[in-house]
Length: 286
Image (cartoon, rainbow, N blue to C red):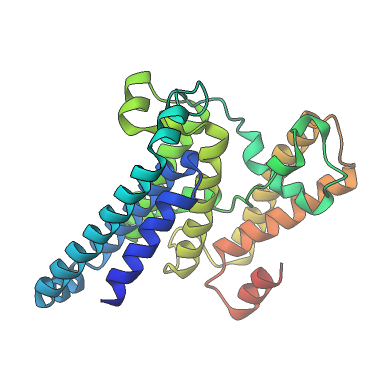
């Protein structure tokens, strides 16, 4: 019964409170998490579902019926407004194709500690639009894929979320054919809006990676640790330096180095998070 009540309020809030451009990619992400969870825990899920199936059916039917009734009442009251908004050029007739988001912009949050509402690169647009995420999933993803190729084993939930991120990555950087954008409803979500769901899934992926068992291809020796950190640092500096050039050298050379060091440390600590408590403490601290 508690789950039924939670389903009712969560579904209503999702439909009524979330900006429509976020709803489509977020809905796909929620479905992805559900599928990944079921695949990972299929034996437990099946056994518990069979035992309580009648109660679950009754709870779902009751909650879903109540939800439909509330939506019907809302539609009756707001029908005229919905018709007007649906026939506007924006957002009613919005028809996005994706593919217009900059790869570098994905990492703009690396410089967030040096920005404030009165101090930010003019080329990056409105300060209100500069909210972003520290992208810790990309490097971790490389090792998840590498580990799977080598061992043919992986955390299925982690892999499913990775697959979802790949779909969003393609949408925001390259776009979909028009028929596919319409079919999937991604046409309602501009790339720069979809990015926020991509960033959120990046956070969830990072958390799942931290809870994942040790990646076998990452060796726990000093030489490998040094080489990995240097490699991550060089890659991060390259990205941050290009970002700074894109921002007309808004940030000083010292700030670029600091941002690179912090970002490199976080990525390196994600990879070695499972090794000992010192690394965990350092990650939490940063």
